[in-house]
Length: 102
Image 1 (cartoon, rainbow, N blue to C red):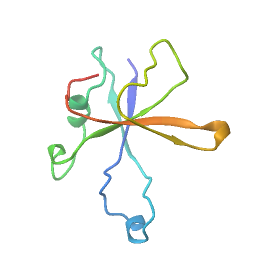
Image 2: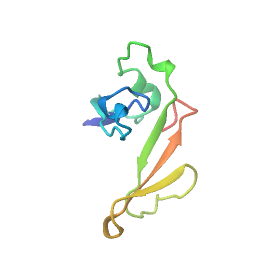
Image 3: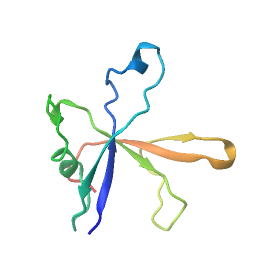
Image 4: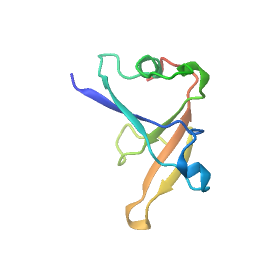
Protein backbone atom coordinates (compact mmCIF):
# COMPACT_ATOMS: atom_id res chain seq x y z
CA UNK A 1 0.00 0.00 0.00
CA UNK A 2 1.13 3.55 -0.62
CA UNK A 3 2.10 6.06 2.04
CA UNK A 4 -0.01 9.07 3.03
CA UNK A 5 1.65 12.49 3.12
CA UNK A 6 0.82 14.18 6.44
CA UNK A 7 1.22 17.96 6.61
CA UNK A 8 0.97 19.65 9.99
CA UNK A 9 1.58 23.04 11.52
CA UNK A 10 2.01 24.16 15.10
CA UNK A 11 -0.16 27.29 15.09
CA UNK A 12 1.48 28.97 18.07
CA UNK A 13 4.97 28.17 16.80
CA UNK A 14 7.46 30.97 17.28
CA UNK A 15 8.95 31.87 13.93
CA UNK A 16 10.60 34.88 12.26
CA UNK A 17 7.20 35.72 10.75
CA UNK A 18 5.72 36.08 14.25
CA UNK A 19 8.05 38.99 14.92
CA UNK A 20 6.76 41.07 12.02
CA UNK A 21 3.04 40.33 12.48
CA UNK A 22 2.74 38.28 9.30
CA UNK A 23 1.21 34.84 9.06
CA UNK A 24 3.57 31.87 9.12
CA UNK A 25 2.41 29.49 6.42
CA UNK A 26 5.04 26.75 6.59
CA UNK A 27 4.12 23.16 7.24
CA UNK A 28 6.01 20.22 8.65
CA UNK A 29 5.55 16.94 6.81
CA UNK A 30 6.16 13.22 6.99
CA UNK A 31 4.92 10.07 5.30
CA UNK A 32 2.65 7.70 7.19
CA UNK A 33 2.24 4.08 6.06
CA UNK A 34 -1.33 3.52 4.83
CA UNK A 35 -3.14 0.75 6.67
CA UNK A 36 -6.35 -1.09 5.87
CA UNK A 37 -8.30 0.75 8.57
CA UNK A 38 -7.40 4.20 7.21
CA UNK A 39 -5.71 7.19 8.80
CA UNK A 40 -6.73 8.28 12.29
CA UNK A 41 -5.45 11.04 14.54
CA UNK A 42 -4.19 8.35 16.88
CA UNK A 43 -2.02 6.82 14.13
CA UNK A 44 -0.70 10.28 13.15
CA UNK A 45 0.13 11.22 16.73
CA UNK A 46 2.05 7.98 17.23
CA UNK A 47 4.41 8.99 14.38
CA UNK A 48 5.04 12.63 15.41
CA UNK A 49 7.99 13.38 17.67
CA UNK A 50 7.54 16.48 19.87
CA UNK A 51 9.72 17.38 22.81
CA UNK A 52 6.62 18.37 24.83
CA UNK A 53 4.64 15.32 23.79
CA UNK A 54 1.78 15.32 21.31
CA UNK A 55 -0.91 15.35 24.02
CA UNK A 56 0.00 18.94 24.94
CA UNK A 57 -1.67 20.32 21.81
CA UNK A 58 -5.21 21.04 20.63
CA UNK A 59 -5.62 19.21 17.34
CA UNK A 60 -7.55 20.51 14.34
CA UNK A 61 -7.73 18.95 10.90
CA UNK A 62 -7.94 20.90 7.66
CA UNK A 63 -10.12 19.14 5.12
CA UNK A 64 -9.54 20.28 1.53
CA UNK A 65 -12.82 20.10 -0.34
CA UNK A 66 -12.79 18.26 -3.63
CA UNK A 67 -15.18 18.67 -6.56
CA UNK A 68 -18.71 17.54 -5.69
CA UNK A 69 -19.19 13.78 -5.61
CA UNK A 70 -21.86 11.52 -4.23
CA UNK A 71 -19.84 11.45 -0.98
CA UNK A 72 -19.69 15.25 -0.55
CA UNK A 73 -21.21 16.91 2.48
CA UNK A 74 -21.45 20.45 3.82
CA UNK A 75 -22.12 19.35 7.40
CA UNK A 76 -20.02 20.64 10.32
CA UNK A 77 -16.73 22.48 10.51
CA UNK A 78 -16.05 26.03 9.48
CA UNK A 79 -15.48 26.72 5.79
CA UNK A 80 -13.07 29.20 4.25
CA UNK A 81 -12.25 30.04 0.65
CA UNK A 82 -8.85 31.00 -0.68
CA UNK A 83 -7.75 32.13 -4.13
CA UNK A 84 -9.32 34.33 -6.77
CA UNK A 85 -12.94 33.98 -7.90
CA UNK A 86 -11.98 31.85 -10.90
CA UNK A 87 -9.98 29.32 -8.93
CA UNK A 88 -11.30 29.21 -5.36
CA UNK A 89 -10.26 26.37 -3.12
CA UNK A 90 -12.57 25.65 -0.19
CA UNK A 91 -11.50 23.98 2.98
CA UNK A 92 -12.88 23.31 6.44
CA UNK A 93 -11.32 23.09 9.88
CA UNK A 94 -12.51 20.32 12.20
CA UNK A 95 -11.77 20.01 15.91
CA UNK A 96 -10.72 16.50 16.87
CA UNK A 97 -12.66 14.84 19.68
CA UNK A 98 -12.25 11.15 18.82
CA UNK A 99 -8.71 10.04 17.99
CA UNK A 100 -9.99 6.92 16.26
CA UNK A 101 -12.42 8.67 13.90
CA UNK A 102 -11.68 8.36 10.18
